[in-house]
Amino acid sequence: MERWFDPSAPLNQDLRYDHGEGCCLRGETPDRRGRLYVRRIFSRRHGCYGWLYHCFNCGWSGFKLQDKSILSPPFSSAAPEERNYDLPDDCTFNFPAEVSTFLRAYNITDDLAHIHHVQWSPSMARVILPIYMYGEYVGYQARRIYPTTDPKKDPKYITVKKPGQVWWESGVDESIFYVVVVEDIFSGIVVSQRYPTVAVLGTKFPPELVNRLWHTQVIIWFDPDETGLMKAFQFLNELYYMPHGVRLVSGHDKDPKFYSVDEIKQYVEAARR
Image 1 (cartoon, rainbow, N blue to C red):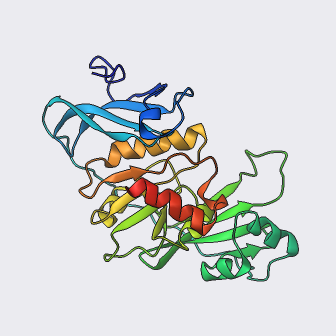
Image 2: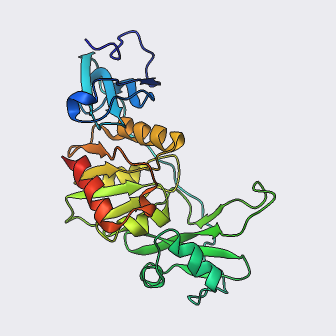
Image 3: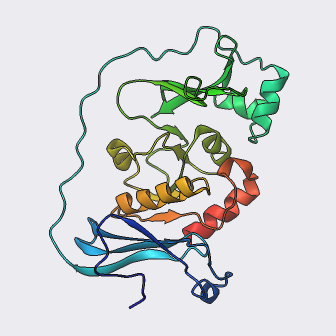
């Protein structure tokens, strides 16, 4: 048994290893940066304990069985409260030059912004990103574009939404065979030019979203920083029981929003294989 499949490892804790020469066997350079993540878990899909693993260097991924056990209880969710989540009154599609420049840095053209109803609020001095679920408006994120001296009082994102957990989606319906899940709306807009896309907008994968995507393969593509990789691996752990499988995009060194459509296709298709 490989050294990273440790039967004494604590449950639900991410451990990192150098995959080393194992990557070479799959046509990649050796991993010396600890990009192999392993978590010993109870798998709802298999009904037993085992090790969930994914190498963000070469894409080696899977679940190795350990022993049999009893199924865990299902998800539960609480009823939300009501609140106002209307768009700011001064929203406009007429972008000042610096706003267009800001959006283009994320591969968002004016036309693409209009398709997804991206707007500008002069009073907030923020880009307004409407959030749609099931084709219905459920809130917005307001993205600061200017520097600040106090990020705690003036955070990068302000989220105003209907009660409960929400996500952003584009092109998602019952007819799709796979969907790409990203972290933020900018990445969602760029990836959705080629694929049905969901942006989770947080650290949790809502139970309702699990139901929404139950019929399709899920491809997770988060930012390549340590937080993004750990969250991607966490979601792989949480969703591994889904019937059509979960895949992680690997080998990228930029956020999804910084890639061209052709490059996005290359990464997503490689993850699906």
